Amino acid sequence: MMDLPLFPVIEATHTDVLDGIGSYTACVNDPPWSAMAAGVRPPQRLVSAWNMDVTHLESLIAAEGDSDVVVGIGGGSAMDTAKFIAWKTNKPLLQIPTIVSVDAGFTRDVGVRVDGNVTYIGKIVPQNVVLDVDLIRSAPPYLNRAGVGDILSCMTGLYDWRLACKHGEGVPWDEELAALGEELLGELESYATEVGEVSADAVRWLAWAYRRIGAACMQAQHSRFEEGSEHFLGYSYEYHTGTHQIHGELIAMCVVAAAELQGEGQHRAVNIIGRSKARAHPEDLGISRQEFAQALLDLPDYVRRQELDFSVVDVTQIDTAVVERLWQAVTELERSED
Image (tube, rainbow, N blue to C red):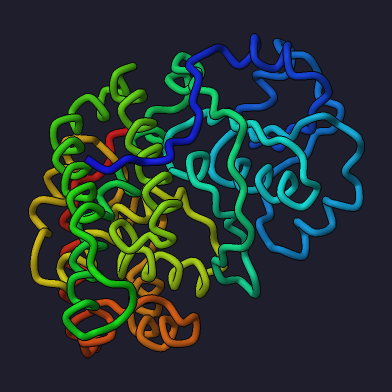
């Protein structure tokens, strides 16, 4: 078992926490902020977290006042906006995720967009991540079911890392990190049905999984065991379309595509997605075949331009026949019922 530097997490209500932290800058997603605002002590400054372009984020720094702490309240964009402001202003950071669709609240890297590309700049560890289970469970179920994406990605991420090592590329193989990835996948299979029900235990488990992922990435100084060609395809799609999908849903779809490209794990991924009721079918995500094809056909060049890690993309010719095969794989996923 790895001795991981876990992020501090407290299980508490958001109202109690916000009552006791002094003046704060709130970086929020809305929803759910409008529904929450009347029940909490007002922030000194309210920042709407919607634009992750680094130029926009830099513009927020000039207006930052003398609040005591920066708080992220919402999903991934709120977590990363709060990280950016706290990092740039050297203020304490508090994260209050309102959904567990992504691991951003439990990782120290600050994710932004530079020229439309996902880029990680700066690192910051929060004083606490607040797990308000009732608040999280009050969100629309599909937002929390999306949490499977950043764990399911261990499947294709591990394949790509192993392949890279065989080619002498990138960071060396680490048995403990690989074992953690496999452990997370095994747990995900066990909890998939609970995730579909968005049970309290599923919310706690997703947070526990994210804590371990964030700590392992921090300790190893890389994320190879849980990020590979599936994330790269997601990045390429968002770059070409200029859209910002619910991260976990997009990654879940891309895991199926990447597993089909790799030639193993497709059925396991489809089974987990189906049991967890996560939205991953292209139609449910508003993804057209043309957009999918564009992201996939340009993926080898995109990976090289962005200097992303070695993966199956580097050893596979992606042509229209491959696009058709992967499109068929993702369109055979179950459609969402809500």
